[in-house]
Image 1: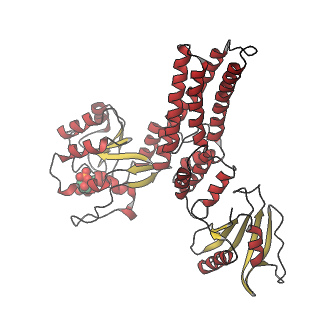
Image 2: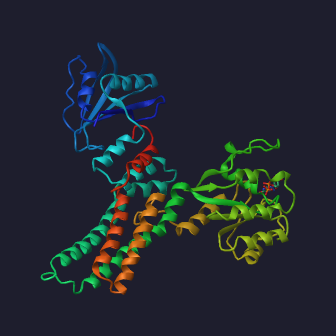
Image 3: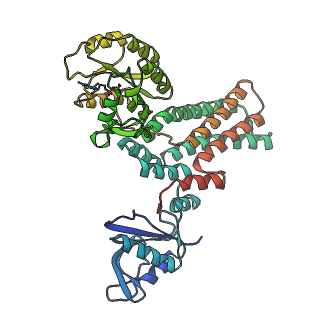
Length: 455
Ligand code: GDP
């Protein structure tokens, strides 16, 4: 494969910048532009070592640098890799990057380093995808769970399941080939045991898919409540003063439909925020209509109730809509003398209630704690659980599950082993796709195109 080069750090003025080369010519290209302080050739041939030197453009010194070498196969990509750490000036980084191109490297595409790591068998596809997630993680928990995947936790689990399937299919094949010497007695018990175990593991991964999604995308949250309860004030409090939009002029800044905010290590994906900001000119009654619409796709509902009023008919109506959804009731405007108490509201709704003031920003921390409790049993330490992060992985898991349910069925009906073998192989392939086996080139390209440059 040709040698690729990219700026691995952002093109902004910073302490250092890194230009990364990977491929057969990585060392020779780097050597063409590197010298020692006294202008002699710089020896960078030893792996896993950092050398001090200078980048030269022909006879002119460009920058003072540190160069790390990772020889194949012990590098990120599995190829020879050279990383030039230069000073982080924008022009400087560009100049050195251009020098690598002039000397024979090709500019890398987004994700191409990781793609090579995958193609060279350094990592499986689940790890590669997790690298992109790790970089994009917006929460502590997202980082933790992506890192576990980068280290291959999902791959390990999948490989374990696949080896059990392979054992069973190999046994069937062998027994069918040589029925005189290999007996299938007792096979169905063992196969059933394996199948149940794998189904259990798949179920677990699928169950945690939702948690995984909420970690990386944020918890889809809708704010509901009757007009004037304080929804838009709450939104502004959550988003923070610096981002609050003043909606004095009707029709302005209505394009922010969704917003991500961080709350106590969690990420909330606030839905239909334009609608909330737009309530000023909306007639009474539409609060319920709005609530209906937002509730459907939400993981979490924040039901804002005005503490300066009784629990009114419209509140009752919204309460009937939130049934079955994870809901936290927020008794708002508690900075004032209230009409409605927390206790009364708890009794009326049967839901957790937090007294807040959207105006004074009180109660927001308790809200974070409550959400954590509702979604992650209070703790955000997932080190023992593996989360799948992508829809692609979910689809493949579902397919493996379907095939294994067929196997279970077949075993119960005492179907012949070659039938079982077909479904076992179906499950085997579906699980293999999670690791990146037999996936099409288009899919591989699509996955890596989502990466940032230089990774
Ligand atoms: P929405 O219609 O539900 O979006 O309600 P708004 O956020 O527009 O608030 C309606 C009115 O209640 C505004 O005049 C706010 O200033 C006021 N308000 C909102 N939250 C509080 C609060 O925590 N305390 C007090 N005292 N007033 C609030």
